[in-house]
Length: 78
Length: 197
Image 1 (cartoon, rainbow over the protein chains, first blue to last red):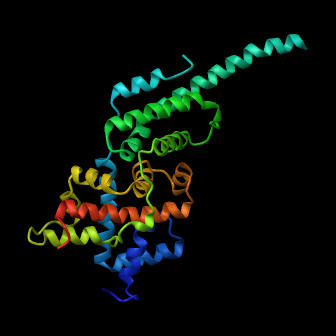
Image 2 (cartoon, rainbow over the protein chains, first blue to last red; image 1 turned 45 degrees about the vertical axis):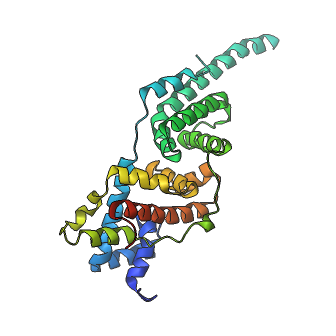
Image 3 (cartoon, rainbow over the protein chains, first blue to last red; image 1 turned 90 degrees about the vertical axis):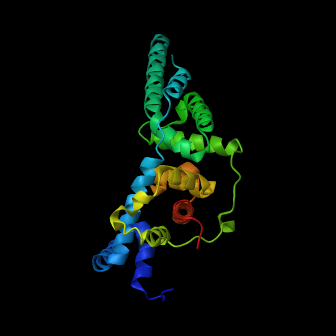
């Protein structure tokens, strides 16, 4: 366990908001300067980014055409 | 005057029909995207298909309550989410009763530790996870957390949209997303590497 002043702890906390692009400018700069200097965090950030893309593509199940037809038949204007 | 009123009535009806047709076409054009989210909110394809049909039937009935120009995909998912809750398919759980999850680096650290012997390329470590691992892990995440992950990470909605769709404060979206992703990673680690050693 690292102490509370560990910059990697801080970087870990910033990872999700960083990838969600919701950090303010100062926090983003803090995360980026740490990432440039720290291979440990940089690898984990890259992994997390790839993981998100993988989750998105792995969980993407296409709708069956039969369902599309059923939905269209629910229209009330026709 | 009365003649004008008589004249405008058919015109009003014609506009109404045109608006309705346009609404229906736009809603149907989004059905693939709505389905992708719906499918991960329930556990089977059959359930997702039922839910989609109920959602579209309701949307077509209440099309007038949609304000043109606003986010139609979010509007449809709001209906879908409410129907999903109404049908009692989910048991609401208090997020506080969930076990404490591991940190954000947990999954990487576990995968890395497991691949030391194989001398794996660290940038390809994500490839140790299979599609089944991911789908299984996501469905093991409790509903409250999973819905937020599905909306934001798969549906590509903003925090604000997700908050409106689920009718919860934006701060709750953020905290559920944060904890939900950690739970997801714990589930993934269990599937890919096995239980905690």
